[in-house]
Length: 133
Image (cartoon, rainbow, N blue to C red):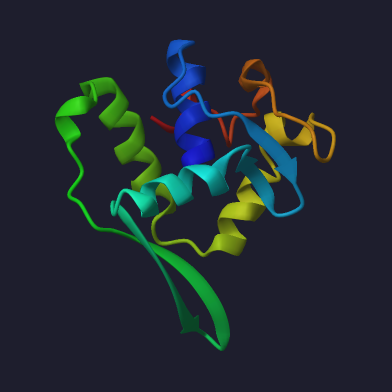
């Protein structure tokens, strides 16, 4: 979902939302430094990692320990984030992964390489932010 928020925002405004860089991996786009960022948030006591069972599988979940300060975001940033949450919050990780595999930036990137934000210009109609809003 973070990938879609970042790339949808870039598609619409030609600016970065988080500025995170993503790599193409088998299950979808992954932020390059996600583990160190999550570790940083856990050390600050802003986030908790828990393991739980979901439909017979062990799942890792991250729970916020602080309320978000939405005042740090602009209305247009919140608009894109809220849109991504609306579109994806009811989907499984597998479903979101499948959608990412149909997104031109992911398709056009080589396995294991960084995904170029500028590839959003080549998105097909079903994935384009402009066509969803």
